[in-house]
Amino acid sequence: MIQITPIYAGLLALLLLILSYNVVLGRRLHKVSVGDGDEKDLIKRMRAQSNWVEYAPMGIVLLALAELQGVSAVWLHLSGLSLLVGRFAHAYGFTRKPQIVPLRRIGMYLTLGSILVLSLINIASGLL
Image (tube, rainbow, N blue to C red; front, side, top):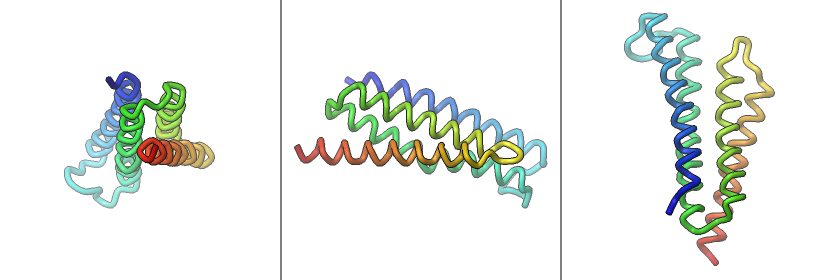
């Protein structure tokens, strides 16, 4: 039974809803229904949301697979928390004016680090 992954999947989904709402507000502000209307602010909002979509789903899938393979709860929580904090830090740093580049960088390190660790855990668990 999966008990840990749903916590992080749910929290990450809430972050996606926030990022999506931010895009909706940008579309209303700039009166753009489709595309980005060449509005830099809207492009930035859309990229923050898209960046989440590019990384978080793979992290969630890897976390669930690791949990199904019986990986230690400590590793699952560390990986899930790293993914969650990484996605939040990146989104927050990216959407600020001006951007908080060190926060974006930390967010990417945490995100990519969690995906790397979970990938290796899954490969090792699958081979053993």
